[in-house]
Image (cartoon, helix red, strand yellow):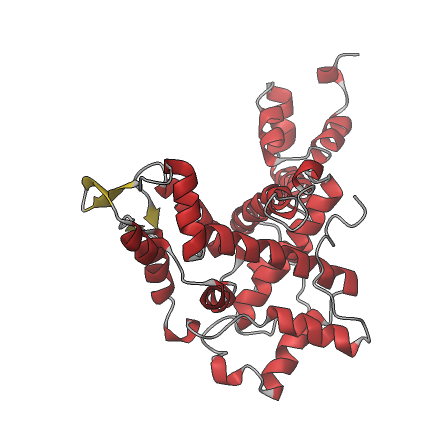
Length: 339
């Protein structure tokens, strides 16, 4: 029997088993009959959400993120929202960011810059189960950032008993293993910020000398008001424009930067990469030619509460673990623990 002659019920089951929304759309383009199967008003959204679960799951964590608002604390369970296209678009956005972090994870976790030089030789892609864990951790870090890394929780409330209780109440709903996965992915984000977004001055100089040689410094392209200008800078100018000081100063900068949610950190990372190839825009603002100045400008637009007010997720995880009588660990490798 031809595939196209199979009963409609079989075609619907096949549609529900597809692993991406693009596969569903491609199936619907093969013939009129299959197009009718995947576009039936009653079946269309369930099929698309089933594909989204395969590609961006767990959707329960993603939906908790997409439906979060200040009217209800994030630790209080919400009823599942009805399936709709606006919700699906939000899931596609946060799911794409989560998959981007799953793609980056192997290159940072098994990196030649770690203390163990054999790590880069052990690098591999994540399994589907590991990507699922990475996405789940990404959604939960994002939810925590939206709820507690914002102007309602300024620096002076960091150790306030009420604020600590609110922050911990969200994490208490998750298992110890899931908290380890959150620590693991936050460690990946920390390394990304340290190496690519807010590198030390020493790292910046080493990077450019490796690329251009000991005796030459790079030429920068400035794109301001539609005009391009190329100029070569001195080492002192490069240190001022792109270096974030020594490792001690960088530590406090990175602590601040980790208050950004995963989508914002990924946006900054992509912006820095685009700047190496030509004109780039960050939050709608054109690049000035200096990564450091662009990132500082981006952070300034968030408000005064952001500065000198480090992230609280790490210490809140340790608080919940101590309540459970667990030993404090950094969770490194938790996402790939059984790999």
